[in-house]
Amino acid sequence: MKNLAYSLFLLAFTLFRFPLLAQTQPAYDANLSDYAYRYPVNYLEVEQEGQKYRMAYMDVSPPRSFNNPQTVVLLHGKNFMGAYWQQTVNFLAGQGFRVVVPDQLGFGKSDKAEVHYSFHQLAQHTRRLLDHLNINEAVVVGHSMGGMLATRFALMYPEATAKLVLENPIGLEDYRRMVPFKSLEELYQEELKRTEESIRSYHKTYYTSWKQAYEEWVRIPAAQLRGPDQPLVARVAAHTYAMIYEQPVVYELSDLQMPVLLAIGLEDRTVVGKAYIESEEERKLYGQYPQLGQQTAGAIPNARLLELKGVGHIPHIEAPDQFHKGLLDFLKQ
Image (cartoon, rainbow, N blue to C red; front, side, top):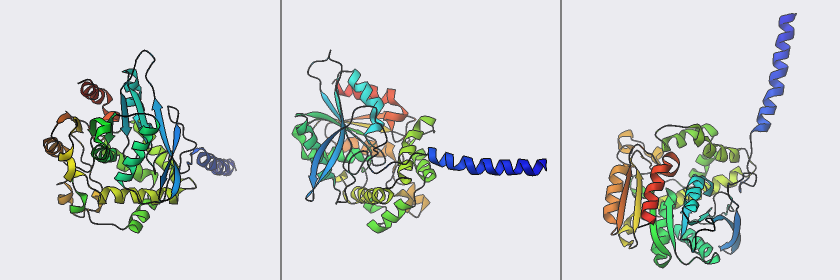
């Protein structure tokens, strides 16, 4: 009888405990309404395809002891949002810079618009934000997909780009030449299959070793999988993948005339759509950032290459001290 009673107790405890565990797992909507950024978030209304949308951004000022601060704009990657720049924002503000961090339309706390996504349009929204903030010129820093956007912004608005910083940018290769084409419907179905574990597995490829601190950037998209807007988030993610695939910037790098810092974590092997390349041997040919960094620095007329040994795809998170030192040296030149 004691064994039976104990078994019934364990069963009751398990049935009671699992719903509680499920309830403690956050579920975020498309605009991350219940997720707090470390700095105040503001919104700008932008228009696209005849509709109006909200674009979220942070605008962080340095301490009052700094007069007429230079502005730095931080542009996020595809699988992130402005919040992952928090260490860099804190560092730059402490050094006297005004820091503007937009969530691009379709990302983070910005609206998830079902529109055609293009780097040209995102660059135009970013320029509208700077105009709204009365910023005529800024240093533009882009990481990963943000590097492609920063490049497009600098090409469209060279007069507004004092300097350009590309941190492990994707798009240093033309993915159309190596990755098989996928339709929007195929990409959407792939997005719907994502799980928290698959997100974590992909994020682990960004770093040379995994740390608990990196879980934050897995937890956020995983919570959106449990949220009410998962289909919308998945559709927008499919559109932005297609944007990266279909709109290369690699052929225009030589047109950049402003000073450029190319910060490269040498352990990075990122290729957008790498899993779609069937041959393992062929996959190894691409995403070789040590070579890509050298090639890109050679293609840009006024480029400086900062090579970060033992660092992967996200230097500002994995090796912030090294990245921030190189960034500050470049900003003060």
